Amino acid sequence: MEGTFCVHTTGSRPKLVVSSNGRGVVSHAGSRLLADLADATGLTGAFTDALRRLRPRGTGHAPGRVAVDLAVMLADGGEAIADLALLRDQGDVFGPVASTPTAWRLLAGIGQQALAALRAARATAREVAWLQAAETRTGIPASQAGGRDLPGLVLDIDATLVTCHSEKEQAAATYKRGFGYHPLLCFLDNTGEALAGMLRPGNAGANTATDHIAVLDAALAQIPDAHRHGTDILVRADSAGGAKVFLTHLRALRDQGIRTFFSVGWPVTEGVRRAIRALPEHVWHPALEQDGTLRTGAEVAELTGTIDLAGYPDGTRIIVRRERPHPGAQLSLFDLDEGMRHQVFLTDTPYGHGSLQHLEVRHRAHARVEDRIRCGKATGFGRFPSRHFAINTAWLELALTAADLLAWMQTLLLESELASAEPKKLRYRLLHAAARLIRGGRRVHLRIAATWPWRQELVNAFARLATLPRPAT
Image (cartoon, rainbow, N blue to C red; front, side, top):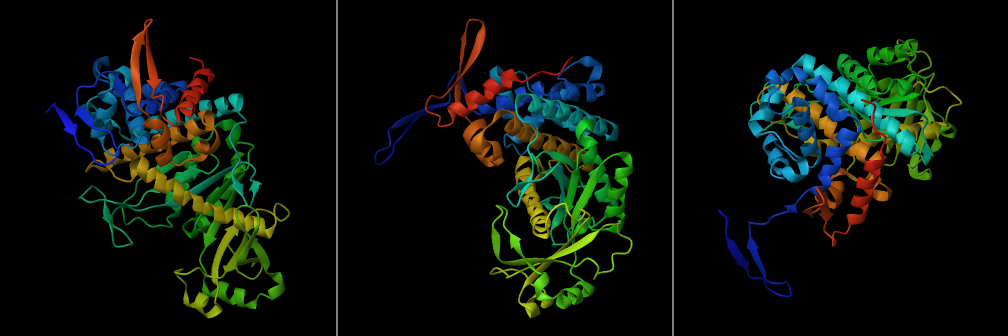
């Protein structure tokens, strides 16, 4: 119901008259940046080719464009398919946007073949984005740990639980006594890109080697050939990634010219406890903080040679960190007896390629994947829209695409703190900016509010977008 209402306020706030008949007013104007970036990287075109068969008789909305609009909506903070209305109701900015039923039909039509085509399309667009970064900036940034740049690429694999509040296909009870899904994900630590994900039932095993292998292979397929071959690729995981089968597969990738290394957690078994107790004090070295300074109350030591690592790849090393526990830390009986918290990990980084302290702080930086997952849950895979597992699998792929768009925006178009900000801040400062549409000279002008604190950052991002080299067509 439209109408005009007078809002009575107290104190120093001005009196407002509120109505719902505004014209030429645009909200979420900054999200057009993501839509244009999808075009500039070739993602829209690649999605269009990948989903061409889902367009009946060439009529209606192009499925690839619908998929991109869904990804833009998720990157903007939308949570449900119905949230496409925000883009659809601003046709002067976003163009024709599919209806909610059309979007549902698209997701329902994405089977395994179409899903594989979507993943290949994402890889094609990623290669373009990385080339654009190389031409306009300094290329893909280095991952960091201990105050130093890490060589090559760093992949972080981790699983998470997603609660389902209704009965959904393949949702199941989780090990934390919840109910839902247990997806396994892989992020590129260098940029925050969401390389791969596998939707799994809630009761899926955390340390399933076959799932880790599938996600790793899918993630490697997303990396452009020029980087996948000839570049060091460090794969990090918690103890769920410490299975012999997974690490053996990871090592075997070197036979294909993929220079993979691993740094994965390992459980503190009884044999590890005995080895730790037998270590002399002089072999313990001070641990480091992520900025390279000494970490108070923490030390690291090498256990290689004291633990049986038969069946693991040649050159596997085992390293332990002990630290005074912080208040509230969950400690084992062994930790309680020793008065220190112990964490152990395996790595095949050769001797001479980094100090013991550096290898440990490098592994501890794997914790950043928890932030990636938390942000990813706010960008689409924190809730799933359908009762059908196949539709939710397609939704996950578009949520990963949304995370990629945000990462590419930061890598290619943003500077200073916004280049490393979380999605929540990006939405508040850039994507949700208000603007006015002005028509003149056969053009449509998007005028960002002159009082918007981050207007110049947004204008600069659009300017950089306009100068990005476009892929050949």
